[in-house]
Length: 502
Image (cartoon, rainbow, N blue to C red; front, side):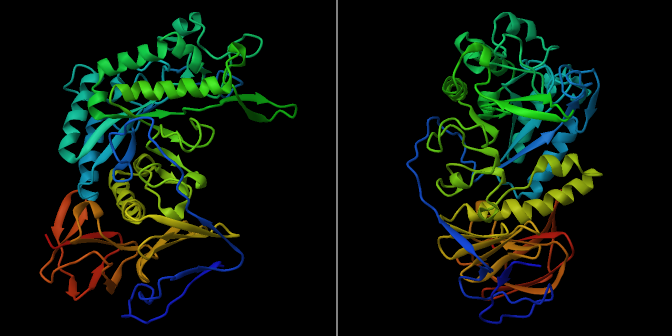
């Protein structure tokens, strides 16, 4: 049973998709039962690095190329080394085709794509080294995988896309070309008795030891000499944890993981020194003109929320940061505070799809229902978050914008000045990066003669043109009518349409 209500003040034109009205008072969304209101309170903020992108205005994604396989040599479950097997999900050629199709669906928004599993045998292979390409994903005409990767970085520019890389600065596997060097240099995390610390994924690098001996700088320098990452201006550092996940089997025979901090008890560094070393790594990338985005906020913070090292988190689940920093100061892909918007997980959309066609359909749906919404919401200042006891919540923005996140359905509805713009799987929003004379309409289940009202700030002339959007490009669309500030259109299930005056 739903725990919230959609209040309607004034009846508008009837719509066949659910027969709901679209005109209501500005407080169109309401929650039932006990609620808690959290006000947005901007904290003092200063960047400690110089971001090359405003990630609140860029579409950011991962593409999963290949997974390295392993046998679970530690405790019968956890990884120590590759077993030589690999699962290829995308080749460089296939990634190129996805990038082209994504650019069509995203209407040319600036994009950053991080490649996962581009090195050695694939994802989580051979760290702490990252100096060879994965030959399983190379183009047939190229000499090696690195040539293919450099080709993709250049070719993607035509499609408004910057290609960069998913790397890891924390894990170390015993089949890595760097393992013996790191072991002899005493920069691998140790237990209190001096033995090497096993983790879920190999061993761990002791951040302060690696930094003080210049080895972190050395491997960053070498990576940047092999690939034009400084030109890309961004890189994604995965699992940049402040704590080490150490697995064990408890007295009942159950597998458990304890989080260890400092990350190397045997080195006697403090948690503060771990944090300082991680900050130094980020600043070193920054000195080369490269932003560092990272996996998530939990147990990974460098300092407190005012520190300003990371311009984007893939798992941005900090309610505190959402209510203390603007979207341009902190944002992400999978956002925990859904009433302030979220993004499609592109990596999962294609990796988990039964076919490329199905992947594009999932991508198009997610882009319209999530990323398009997020881009729109990021143009408005946040004012408050209202929560109920069942994790439903309302986002309150400036200029009369409201959202409602339904935790049971995992959907976000949007209204401006009481006019519904997103609800029940249907979307009617501008692509803000294209200007104020465009609207994107999408219907998950299809609709017949649905009438929408243009949000304030958006105008469409009567002679506006329209196109159906897909990964293959644009085709003309005529089943719409503009009368004043109202647009009536009919959409098939899963159809995305762009209406534009220019």
